[in-house]
Image 1: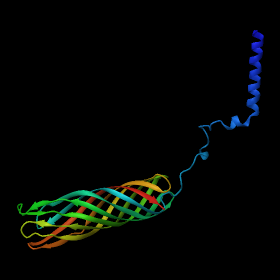
Image 2 (image 1 turned 90 degrees about the horizontal axis):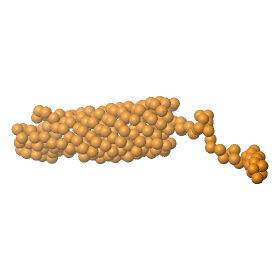
Image 3 (image 1 turned 135 degrees about the vertical axis):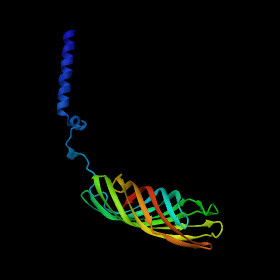
Image 4 (image 1 turned 180 degrees about the horizontal axis):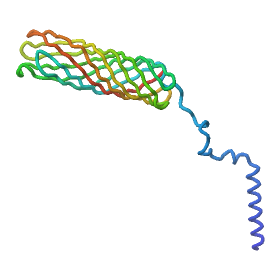
Length: 228
């Protein structure tokens, strides 16, 4: 009885070894080795940051106005959002291009002056800029960059109280900043950036006299971008 059992086990082992050796499917079904050469792995796309792009951007801002003849400043804050677009050229890790944006905003603040008799309430409702951009891809999918260019903003500048009235002005100046952009795939990327903007001063006339506003601001934005 035991001899037949040994014979059956031996026969099964021989048949199993024979089937394994004669079947190419089993060897083909084996999972790839985790030590496979690097060239067998998919590579990230080259020049992923090159070309035309368009996207949406949203964030927050602070603007401070020096104004005279009153002493002191007016601090304001709020939100902004709009569209961003441009073109980038890339060679290796180096990226350069031009970029612009157009933003709707609600950046407002107020301050009493003239011993509390008047209230100034500046509010920026529209902003735009056109900037040069240059950066370096620290990995094939992560770009750090800096920007510099011209900026514009439109502001409502009402003053309440004796001699006050509604007012508005267009401010022009320069903007500089930087940030980081991450390519999610060959077409989509996400970014965060900061910009400082210094506007030229503007004089606004009211029934009670003229007031000069000299604003500067900071913006912090996140953007989702599609590259064509």
